[in-house]
Length: 88
Image 1: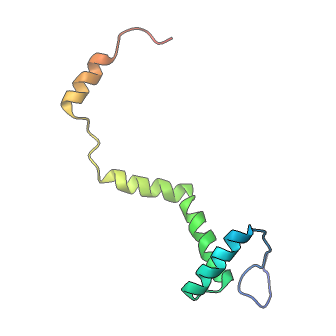
Image 2 (image 1 turned 120 degrees about the vertical axis):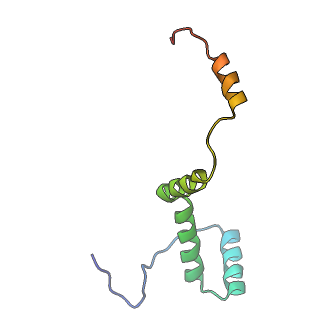
Image 3 (image 1 turned 180 degrees about the horizontal axis):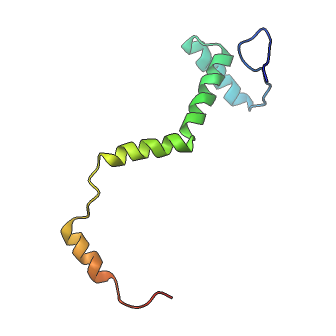
């Protein structure tokens, strides 16, 4: 589906609390952005933050650089703490 209009994006209306609107308006002014640009950047950032695949990829990247071997003394302690009782 393609949308045609005079803007390069989808127009929408949202309701936000007045204090958030005023703070966003002030920040947009300070950054020299339009409100639309500020909201688009904020939503984009939020979506990236909660993108599960991106979070998993970042965690994989960080963890791939870490040694995952258990210290031998901790491994010994852990092995001794496991009982031979059957699981219930």
